Amino acid sequence: MMGVCKDRVVIVTGAGRGLGRAYALELARQGAAVVVNDLGVGNHGEAGETSQSPAEEVVAEITAAGGRAVANGEDVADWEAGKRIVDTALQTFGALHAVVNNAGFVRDRMFVSATPEEWDAMMRVHLRGHFCTSRHAVDHWRAEAKAGRDVDARIVNTTSGAGLQGSIGQSAYSAAKAGIASLTLVQAAELVRYGITANAIAPQARTRMTEEAFGASMSRKDGDFDLFAPENTAPLIAWLCSAQSGKVTGEVFELLGGRLSVALGWNDGPSRDRGAQWPAEDVGDAVAGLLADRPTAKPVYGQ
View 1 (cartoon, rainbow, N blue to C red):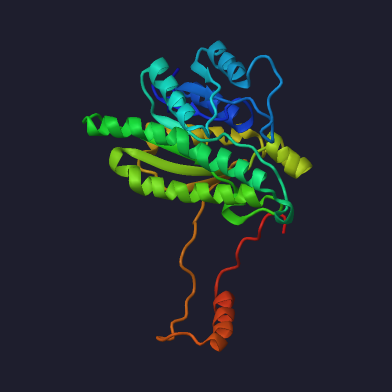
View 2: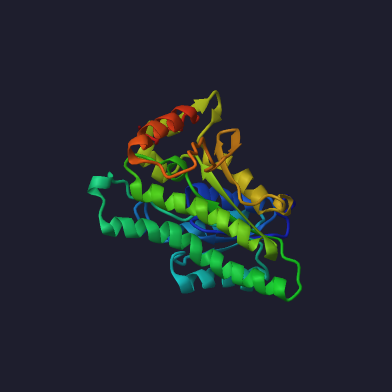
């Protein structure tokens, strides 16, 4: 197959359904060989119920269309399993060029009702899940670079609007997704010397998770254009995994329908400098002035 990802090998985690499935199918259409990773769990991390795994179903779609793909059912948050996911790409296709970290689930809960078990589950699947596979991929790419071979590799992470500005009822999910945005910035800064870029996306798409949280709002259309179709995000993923994106790193992209934007991120805002220690009684007036001078912040989702 021809396309922007011709001869590239890409791992997509959580690729059995929703966004991950759309990414895997588009990457294959664009010429990539795809490792379709999916543990086959439900929205909240519960065990799946089908005899054929979602990953195997996606692989069947790709191969039926003439593409190359292999299924993998490993747990992305398990350290040794992360290496086996990378090894699947290397042993099956002989190379690895990109990792798309998409796997995750959600357990919505107001902060006052949050439990340690749910909190740990969110951090494990999202933060540790983004760490394990990418870390083993980086080991491979770094060894290639040290051996004098050209490396043109990509890490594509998945943050969220919840991580960039917070979402009521999703404190653990928001915290994990915010961590992923920061992780992306650090990866971009540290790994560029090895020929590796790192970017993140904050997709707005209809999936099992978002339909449960946002219901009918995820069915909105602009005429015949389905704004929240997961397929809308897939071309961005394919481009980020391609050789064409080699000069772009450390960015967070948001996409809704046909509207593509880049996040500005945290930056320095207004300041006051009195040239000496602030007396406690003067801090209030200074803070009021700073808040009056700054641009209006985006509200927390649901606020």
